[in-house]
Amino acid sequence: MPIVVDLYIPRQSWAHAIDPRVKLLFVASAILVLLVFNNLFILLGALLLLHLIHWSARIPFQKIKFVWKTLLPVMLLISALWILFYPTGTPILQIWIIKITPLAIAQGLVLAMRILSMALAVFAWLYTTDQPSLVRSIVKMGLPYEWGLVLALALRYIPTFQGTYSLISEAQQARGLDISSGTGFRRVRMMMPIFVAMVISSLRASDQLAKALESRALGARGVRRTTLRDIHFRPVDYLYVVLILAITIGLLYLKFQYGLGVHSVNLM
Amino acid sequence: MSSQVGKKVIKNENISRNTEVTETINFSCLCDPLRVLRESPGSLFLLEYCQLTRQACLKAQDLWFAYEDSPVAALRGVSLTIGEGDFVALIGQNGSGKTTLAKHFNGLLRPTRGQVLLYGEDIRNRPVSTLARRVGYVFQNPDHQIFSPTTRDELAVGPRNLGLAETEVQRRVTETLASFGLKLYADRQPAALGFGLRRKISLATVFTMQTPILILDEPTTGLDYRSITELMELTRKLHHRGYTIILITHDMRVVAEYAPRCLVLRDGQILADGDTRTIFKQTDLLRETHLELPQISQLSRRMIPNGMPDDTLTVPEFCEAYSRLSH
Image (cartoon, rainbow over all chains, first blue to last red; front, side, top):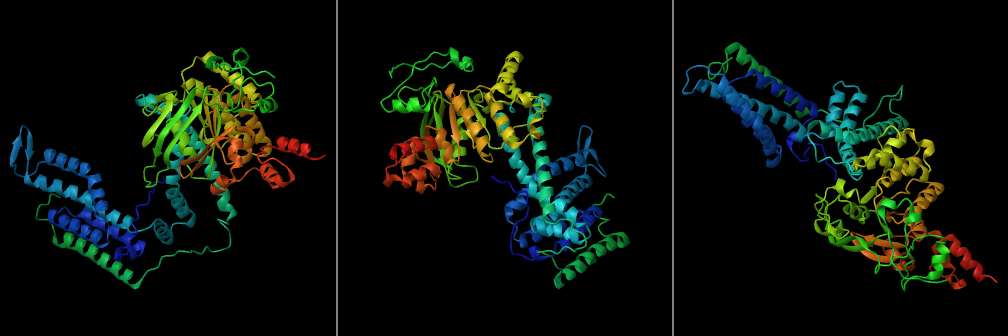
């Protein structure tokens, strides 16, 4: 019963074909833009744009719903807290000492949409990039190969360790360990046998893996490592880079030079 | 040689001091008295499978089970009865459902459909830790169980989990160390010992809980001949003392030499259930399930035209049959 941690959804789409480095640039730019702007309409536009990107990348609706569902509690909490405790401008409603103002409502919505948009930007990258390409992109941008390998191994071993955990848990339960009862500290103490067995097992596994990797010439000196599956910039990828940079810089310029989005519902 | 009919009495508390248990030999019309004498001289308990007089301790009734994300059922309508004091081997290909079935016996898996009865009681809602009092499961990988700093501590974990008094725990640990030959390693770190020893220790840790039923999941994989013999002789001794043994294994030689009864599984169904000797004679069945007879049995079968029997299971049997041949 393998539980895969990979968020990648294999599809044929323009977004899947883009070089992962471009997508990373997109994520960084998107987060920057989303943090800089406080305008309700701009953020609404960004949110819609991101949904459009997800839809055109053929990401199933379920996956987008997943992001919404996970973030909804946080979004509601933050909006509510802001609306209730940061009144600015003229209040339209007053309950006891709590003043509700339209400006505060707008800002609350902005905060909620910002969180969601940032998450959707990150997921647009993760849903359309598979693990090997992801690691390869980071390595190509300068991360030493061994670090990239560490990252890839960590991701690959998560399901393995989940499997080992359930096996160890079963084995200890079969010896009478009761992990369902008890509260707080006692419960943690009950997990100790499982924890220790897991650590020993992980140490053994990592030792064996290290020997296996070494036996396959990891870290060989004097040779340049080649790659079986490489990623390359297509001509259109350069275009995307230019587009993303132009839009980002353009938006920032418009905001700081001409005050775009400052005079509408803006509190900064 | 005389035969007496009577009832076998097992007292769990005194199981380690089997000299105090009173019993009379139990014969049925199925057993071969001569073979009893030949195979187990001096043993106190009868090894033959005799469903009529044995108390059924484990029962599966029309058991169905499918893993969560699997459309195919791992177990399909399995029904079996295991009597107290039985020694049963579950054999079959990988994926035939042996471990899946065995995990139902101590509650690690719950049936999708059907029932599992332990001493007549449906165990569907019993937590695993409660069932651990009656059913001991020795896992395939000893490293999934071992976590204590010393062997002594490791052996004590089981009985302590069961809430026994410390004096009783220590008594059991000392006794187990002696009977398993682990006295030398009592204060060593079990994780640092060799694989064969770790295997033995994992069996010992379950043994200290003194559960009447013991399930051994592939105990012999990765062991050399000598370690296999050591482990299986230990298991046989336990069986002689009255423990019910369920053995999951691929090793047909081990089944032939140690398990009087076996269950053949394929694709989640029981194809055959009975006396090992009888089942090993059904070559079509074995071929269907891709199970190979032990080499000595294969040799014996090849020599059927020369007068060798068709149901040889062990080397001593072969030698005896062969010596009767040549004149």
